[in-house]
Length: 164
Image (cartoon, rainbow, N blue to C red):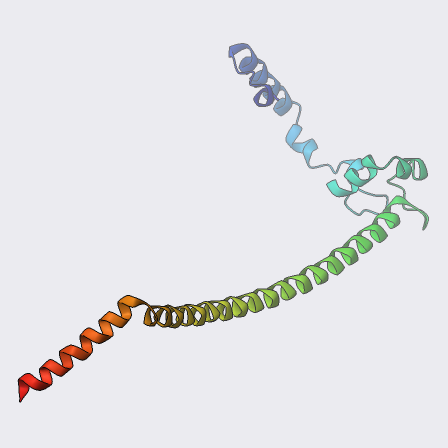
């Protein structure tokens, strides 16, 4: 408890040492071996922390089963809790089934998206090629392109006459 509230000083330490010595002298180790009555149901089954939490958090259970340790009849907290756990595990398994199915569907959808992305990239390349062709066609009709063609033709003609 001193750790929880950060209460370390000489007085607290002295008191704690005295308390531990008194517990040892009183035979705490021997008594610690004796099973605690409220750790077990009447049938000897160990009460888990989850048993306690479920009972503590549900007022209806406390009213229906005022003695949660009793297992003398079929309608008791012990058997109610066994059914509760079965149902919880069944729902958990069912939820896991749907989670796994959803993950499989998402993986399939991811593969489809990757295929669509690849097709989209191919389409962009085709569009870029066509735009290059359209650009060349547009250039082909311009005055600059006509002058360039004439110049190339003139060079070929001159080369033909010069090589003779």
